[in-house]
Length: 467
Image (cartoon, rainbow, N blue to C red; front, top):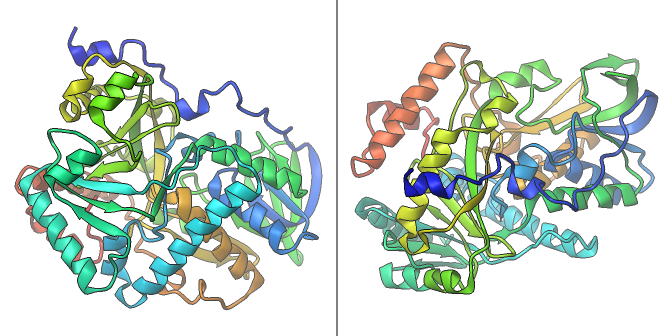
């Protein structure tokens, strides 16, 4: 038995965040008929933020939220707990796609993160919110050069406010790993939190404002019904004036929106709590989130009780884009992650992992959310967050509500909101293209970051994968 295998011997195949004795009981399923002003479909962050903000905008609005399983059980309850200000899956992606709007997008993103922090405080949501920032670390010589160049580019464009470049000594003074060569510390643009507790807290806030929540109530179909809409569920039907769809990785009730997303499975490990001596060997006094800058990157952070979450690297696309529970457990990826963990932190040899899990992320060809309407403006939808939805979903909720209201706002006038990404092709072309891209990205990581012809072609088409 290798030391990596031993470290996983007692790991439970469950998302750490959801394995909580304080997990709230689900609300009853819908049976019979319901009517409302606004129906929200989906009990992840997208749906919860939409329902909450709808009631805050208009307390008299009658809002119903339906969730196919339990609130927060999918991506919202099993992610890394990084809550970023970025609305564009990082500044580099936003600058490449919307250079003329990037300052506005950064300002709106910062305002959105402030609003999340304020909501957590106002509704007393106990979700371990820590605004510690994030360090992007270089572990290879070409990554160090790229970080220095990117820092200078941010400075030239007036976009480096709150960002600090750290050389090898400075980054290791923050978090000590022999693999770290440099870092960029975004001091204000990222918070850490307990993702499931955020979802549960938003549910409690929604209920407190009068939102009617039905769990174990999948929405099976949507149709126009006179001047409104009708949504069918297993044991009932809901008639609504308008609907907001926050189904993300799951098939949209608006069929034409389905081609814009595919599921990609991401995996993570959680250690046992570190002893004081083990934590001191790493440092990490400022508790930042971290991510390396490889194409196949890792993300890692401390929890409130000083466990280390370690995730990323493999991104697995199942042929046909199927979302299945059996894909949540992938032992060979968990073993690979454990090996990488001890390479990064050799001083933590002997630490055991208590949880190992996975889950599906909805990605699109531009890696950040897209938005739209259907049924003559009575339905709004948003999806495609590509793993950075903990913060951006709140902004997406505001966009959906603006679109349903028919309002021209600073949000709805954004090119990012007005235009869609390119759809994915049908199978087998989607699987072939994604597999070739993943192979090319892995090859670039081992060849000094050099992008091959396939990646350069995707870059020219506006489909450039960089993470």
